[in-house]
Length: 60
Image (cartoon, rainbow, N blue to C red; front, side):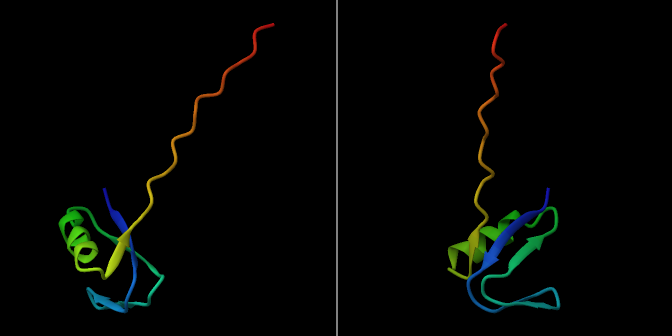
């Protein structure tokens, strides 16, 4: 599963340059690299998708 982080500074990764505020999508197996970027303050983690409450059907 790929992971996404938001660049906080200008990043050059794998031959591509990302500007601050731009989303960086890293391929499978790069979670450790993403954690390192976050740990050094170069990026922030993508927010988790909100969990929606299940809809309830009204009985008739």
